[in-house]
Image (cartoon, rainbow, N blue to C red; front, top):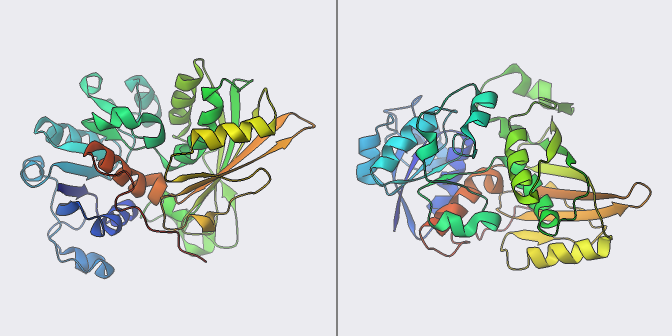
Length: 341
């Protein structure tokens, strides 16, 4: 049995973790934390959870007594401090923030303006199961990938395996539901600002850019740059990512490559050429759909992927990592089909 703690349980990601773990046969939630609502029963904050567990302040000693795994869904920098203390006590950690995603701590400092003391001594793994499964099995701390990188990287990685990427710049366009911003107040997220409109934000400076560049460069064997434009669209969940790349072969070979690459993956599904995915197909699930076509006039491969940003883009992928770390079937607790329509 995995005895689980969730730090930051009242946010969207924390509540999604709770929903998934509630039906997981090998996980028991033994600690839940929230700085904002500490001392209150969870049901007073979110009645639909039907749980009266008292929400606790972050106490690493208490967590270590009650858990053998801690999920952290906390602000940048806060997760690191908590995770390091519980990891020293033998508790495994899966961080859903950015604190453990980077191989080079200087990149984190540049993009998050914080220094993580002792980072070079952490036995951490970037938690994309389809790529790092064997390393995740042995990890003490897993940095769960960001939502945008998850959709983009899964759509590009097969090209890198075969060295089919011609140019060193990848153009990525993503559209996300509003829940991707988290459960927080802000005028840009209120209904009248978001409804019936689409807007770009953090263009060319989104914090997920270095994460994508790190992983693409690592697997390409050379520096790969990302031009990334994220958009906010008027829906709650889902990310639709479109990628434009130059390749050195035809669509038929590429499609076969993708089919073979993801053939045994329980959550990644490659569509026939010319069939394009919809975010409706993944709502509430850990699944990913990848579509593709080829634009012959410009020799451009166009890739598309869809994920639910709160599941495969966050909580579901975290549970997938938990299953790997504890030797459980990888899809355990994640078998739910998408909600449709």
